[in-house]
Length: 491
Length: 97
Image (tube, rainbow over all chains, first blue to last red; front, top):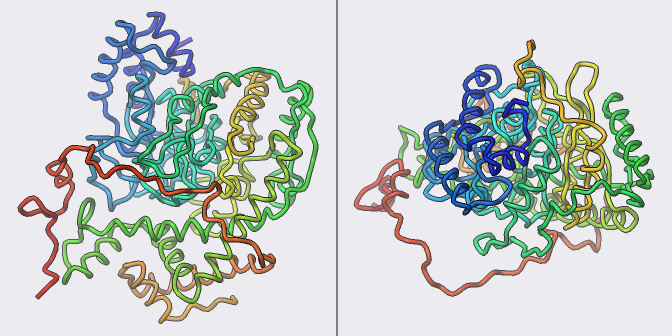
């Protein structure tokens, strides 16, 4: 097996055993990046020199016995909305084209402390607003399974980089499905933790009450190990939660006997691709064979999640993105008359159409006269959706659902109709509204050869249950990389 | 389309959002926003009377700490990101006559 085909945890083990050097692993990734980036375009920034230097420093600490964790020496990629000290952080937006953070996001810091080697920053939808990575100002990212298709979004660069073996694992962020949907499209495993589990300090905010950082990797074991590493209580994030049950790798057991798995009937109706449906139901069958109790049920309120989400996320975005004004960092317009005009011109030149669309919608729903009718209505709907999940989790340990109604669309198909693109988030969005953990696990390919992902949803703080279900399912199949990633001829 | 966004509304939203929109962008925004609001109006089917608005899923409390500086003076590095700076401060166009 070549180095690149290992999982992150396997690689970490081999590095510790002295079979593989940390610099050797980093170099393997950097060479793969050089070879495949013209076709994939997963990265916004690649820090070749820095990565090799860090790998050597980490190797010394491993040799000295100072670094013992599972990720020591493992090369990773970071979504470009997490601040990295001294390394450009753009959010894939022109307004931050030259921003060099003076500090590192807490989650990234936790990875660094564990000895992970950062290769660079990955492409994303501008400010994480989008479902295809096509709203990026930094160019297109292509799906390694078929480069005519999108990788999904907004963490499309992170997912494509993992699928293309351009890193061993990556961090993404998930506000309405931005880890789970692209993981599904790229055939990788991605986990969005319970809100508050991973610090948002240094994550450039989109919808603060929904944003959560999580791992993207080749399998459930890697995701559990990474989550264990990045989860921490952080005083610098006022919504951070002090959890005592962060030993997520302890849930990596095949035991699902008696586990109650609910399949929401209302997720399997109109709009769901038949091949995706069959793959999800087949995965449910595998878990049933292993002893889980699988039942259908009615979740209710499903169609209200998207409108509620777009009100809440846009409202928070309009507030969060007011900090980009051409004063402290980023783009400043060249020509303007006075301070106010400078704000307006800088923002108008710096933000792309999707970001402007959401800022305006957000400003509108928060404006006097509309606040009650739209914003408070959406927050009330959120409360009802949370209650619907509470009821579901009284009966079930895990909810099993698709991650997306279809496999990856072709490039250029989605942006012309924003509302249609928003509807693609129907299975992921409610999880953010309710603060729940959710994980995408690959469960097959469609007839076009594009990956299908199933989504496992747990109650708040019940990551271990979805990890257990995902791990048990995963034992029935082996990880499949796209031909492009392993040097096979592809289109 | 049930929601017709007027020129005045788009003008007002542009001011709130601090965006300078071209005529073409304004027309586009009127259409987009009207369509989104039509869709969002679906929420009116739900009876939410007596339901408290939920801003956070968990009870969020203010986190207090002693007012002690723990990070160092990083002025020089921070100012490196500023489009314009002067005398150790961010420089902006003249705002007070």
